[in-house]
Length: 242
Ligand code: PRP
Ligand code: URA
Image (cartoon, rainbow, N blue to C red; front, side, top):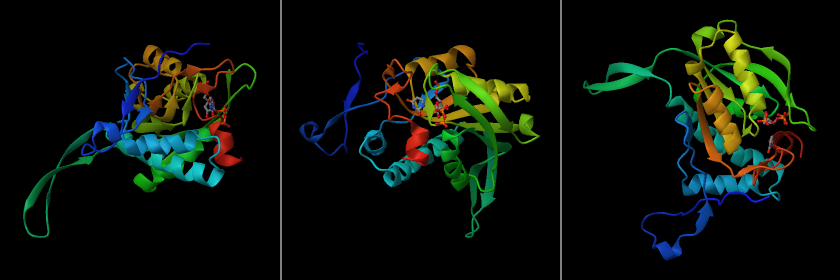
């Protein structure tokens, strides 16, 4: 099946002449206002190259995924509102700064989403984390909801929803429905994701335009088994078992 052409970009520091910069495939742009793609830096592309490689073994897959997850969490936190906060420094000067005001929580879509919990904890000490167990049927790719355990005051929190793969969008959209049914306003949900398909990104834009999606990369598409291509295979299997 023919895929639309992948955008490519030459990568490397500005001081390098163009002839010494390699060309690499970068994220597809998307026209959806609620979908934010991380800057396609040489670091990010090198990290993604590691985790996409089928020959990367589990310990490295975990290490490099964790680095991308950290970038996603840091960028995701930039989408939360802040208020002005003036402080005094040890040398007696004031500094006009900001601070985040409000409560947050993480919610991971099990199993693969649990891989992103540590990255969130590294940035937000003692953050509460809820869980939603949704599994895709291996034949039909339809999601099934098995279980959820969420903070009882989740409706008053900003929610960072965690899942590394957004393929058909079925699992993530189901998770958003669960959050909404517990009273979380759509515009208080941020979906943090490593690799999205254009189809999944569009589903979010069409169904939940107020949910912000922060992703590292929008890939070319889906194959006949609804795997993301070029993708990285089954994230949960590679992180937890292979
Ligand atoms: C994977 C992935 C997402 C979902 C994406 O999980 O982690 O949750 O598939 O596909 P979708 O957008 O088409 O719904 P899977 O159900 O394979 O379970 P796992 O997390 O246990 O690997
Ligand atoms: N889940 C994955 O882990 N990978 C895909 O490509 C699609 C769904």
